[in-house]
Length: 292
Image 1 (cartoon, rainbow, N blue to C red):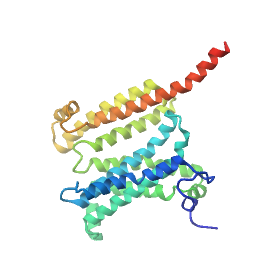
Image 2: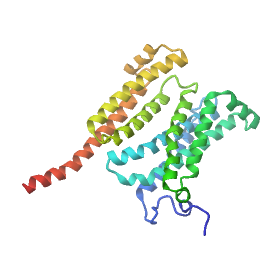
Image 3: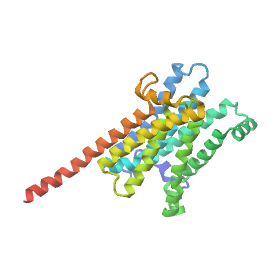
Image 4: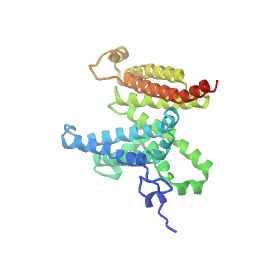
């Protein structure tokens, strides 16, 4: 009996029944897109003076994006009526872990791979302590993401263990917020998206996960919350004028603000969900009208 997990013995674009899955192939190929974008940025010297720090930053950004994408699979399955998305969740999760490993590698490279210096850095900087806890949690999830782990742990134990994904992602975003580059932008976009994902799960448990009105209200609330949190964080942590930070939501001087990015994403999801809901309702209405 082979000790190699079945997931490694079969191509990543095939289902458990060995059937070819275009969706899984697309997801697998998609996991290389961030690497291509990072490589392009590196080769075109977008890193300015510190290439290793630039690679560290973007590998972390893409790891976080993929972690959020992993959490979005469940809402997307229900909102878009696309059950087959469950087949790509493991691929996206493993991809997130791979970019996390790259992120850790470049952090070690910044410190010349010197163990005493690495230990000292982690012990002295709170943001790195947070990152370490998040990395340990993600490693546990990656190490038990195979079918063999599910069988060994049992379904309920495995499910409880994988609830770690929520604090793990929260800590990853918190680590980003604690970084010197957290005065605005991506960390707050990620925070808003994460809050949307968590609140959606609460709504879904109450039967409102597919309700268009609830989705629009959720989007508006998270948008305002993101803008206020960004201004509060900038003022509290970085000593910036909160009102000035808020004003950037009505200007493109610094690009599209985190609040507007969260608003756009949440509204797109709400509109698609409403469209899909109407598609499902039409055959039912047509059936009732014909049966009268």
